[in-house]
Length: 279
Length: 279
Image 1 (cartoon, rainbow over the protein chains, first blue to last red):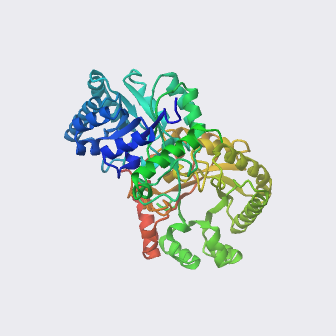
Image 2 (image 1 turned 90 degrees about the vertical axis):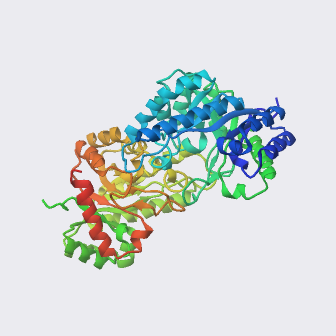
Image 3 (image 1 turned 120 degrees about the vertical axis):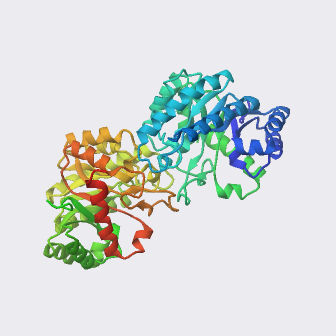
């Protein structure tokens, strides 16, 4: 097993690379796993992407993302569910069994987080049978509480698991992403809970750096640049029985402004230095 | 009891006003309570401020802020404790019994949140007897998790109470600030825990608006402009037995750019409309 055997590069980390460039770059570096995003896949073509990654011998570890389930308006809700069924189809076509879900924020004018979380459960109830029929499991991702109003009302692993556990583990689990949960002293115990239930469906890494940029979306740090002890979190998921891929998913304007192949090589090196090796 | 009987204006909300302007403006509007900050008080003069608020018949509901207890370096730690003793002196001189504590972030190069939280407990152990001798109680404020690395490693009411409960309630309690805890589904139960223990030492309001500005410090929303149901949170603290002042503390560049008297009048009106009245 090479150092990069468990490493997966999330496409968003090097979004300046086209899909063929990404596949080629992975081949050069010995990276065998990628996490994909729906928008660039659609742009390149779904079938074309599926063929590209197959021909390159790449495993697709996850597809980002479904979700956005919190609408109150019935038509909007129906559209969201429909879009999620398409996301399931796309995951199946790409050959990944994992669809990452970002749940959605508060609808305009609403201040009721609790009701929004309940609507997510309702939407999952409708989506789960379709996903199972297509061999796709759903991975609810808690997002950092700074996104609670406009992006994701599920802010902690505890909340994500409370939702996931209403369904069988092979249907619904969670995405553990260090960027979103590193501050939470209850997260290690929740990782243990998730692992015991077989619900760690994805494990993603990004580092926490400050100052946060305006809008707080694209300031995720390169591994090793920030406040998060990556080996510690790898230890938690492994103690919980997780042996799957470790995806690095960075949204960072500075990284996007650089040569994508260089960023991919750097990210792989940081993975080895900060995630695998003892300090 | 007038509508503004429990309202307190935190000085930072209208920092464009000098202390005499603030006192005068409060008098005009029938506002009888203010929360003060150390820096502007020092600039105007501690004794002069104490006389000003006394002469104006204003009650000082809290002083912001002590804390920043997380240094590892012994000299830095000693300086922080010394500064906190000065903060206690200042609170006593200003006639408030409540010093708000912002605990501090990770020291440079550290990734150990747990150890940083433990150093806060150690610092409190040293500070508490001094504060008690001066009739001042300490109010640990959990800050939103987006500040965990650079400002405050205490991110939840649960963590704040775990620290506070190592000391008697009349010595150490918590500051409940809607801006920092509104996303947390465990916060209502923690408010009940705090109230049952007599540990709600301050209650502050700010609304949550997006997009967050760069650095995420000065984007707190005017009451009623954001995602937080203020009456709901007032209900939680009151159900927990809290009958004290309700401070509005906004850090907001747009409010600071406006006429301070107008902002103070608006804030008082928003308090009545969104905190007191039924919708």
